[in-house]
Amino acid sequence: MKRSTLSHSFLNIVLVFIESALTLLLRLDPELRKAAYPLAKQGTVVCLRLYLPHVQIFATFSYKGVLLDAKLPAGRSEPDVIINAYSIQVLNAITTHDSETTDKLQMRGELAQVQLVKQFIMQLGLGSLIQSVIKKLKGGGNKSKPNDAEMEEKKNNYKLRIKEQQIQISALTIKNRELETTVKELHSKQKALTITAVIAAIVAIGALIMLFTS
Image 1 (cartoon, rainbow, N blue to C red):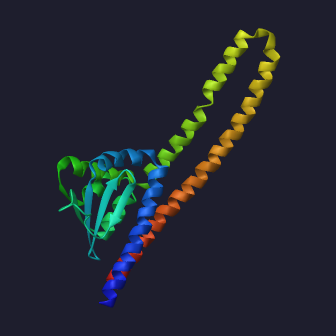
Image 2: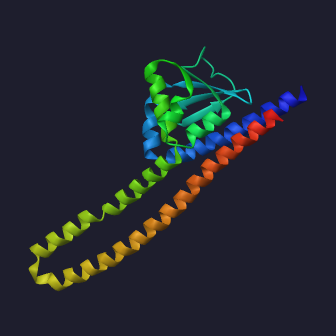
Image 3: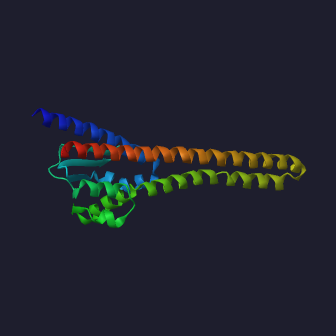
């Protein structure tokens, strides 16, 4: 009885840790938020039944994130989607951007919701996350282009201030180079943070597996 209580408490701690990691990933990856939105809109509840060890986890999608619990949410008689898989299969699915690996997971539920859950799992891949972060950073860098166009327009409208315009353009060029350096540094930091979060989640799940198999 004591071991059962201890195991349940440890499971809750692990779920809180994974939930926090998912929240971080949702903040960093707009594509992941996009994949989660239709599930959150429907309040989808996913039951994850793991083997080796035998663990049952319920994931509730909401606008606050993905809420994890060992029990079915109050007011729900059954989950919308049920996933039956070995722990290693789930680990492979959430750490890769591979449709074939995701398709190997046994899922039951309405076809539309099953497809949405598969898309969310695939978007959890680390490679996809890094690409999204890079696109976001590049998008932020491209915002400086309209400023250049505005300065060119001013240059045409105020020909008497050509020299001043040239000085401003040179300053913007230097600033743009500094911005590119800053973007690269931010990319490196966010990449490291993302990798750390994913590895931490994998380690936590691995610890759970070792606990129940010991």
